[in-house]
Image 1: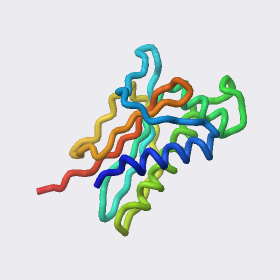
Image 2 (image 1 turned 90 degrees about the vertical axis):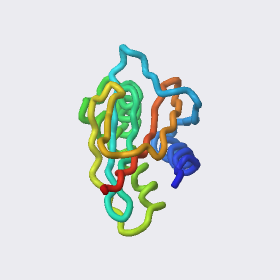
Image 3 (image 1 turned 120 degrees about the vertical axis):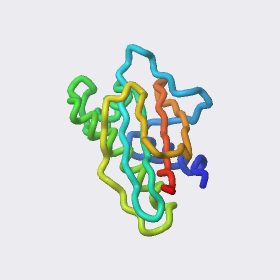
Length: 150
């Protein structure tokens, strides 16, 4: 099952309607600069289909999202605000992806971590990995599916 068109549509809609920010899909690999802290927010989907939806982005982009989401300046956004905002974006993306999956499907609460772009999901295969750009900041949406156990 390929989710590429849906991910592009969901990402554009979520970022535009929630943050009033335009995003565009790029063909460039996700490579934030080495001096940037990178965060990842993910939600797990369990049920008939099992996997994870994750958003990886530089802290600066997550901070911008937090400022917009919580109507504050970027300088006033706490790390908890930043985590909450990125977690909510992952939650919205996961909810949209979940709607495409067979029932029953359950969405976990979001988890947010500092990853510096190295987040590994054991015993999974990548279903989709798309890179986007928002105000010159790259970010990536990935979906991994749990491998069947033999």
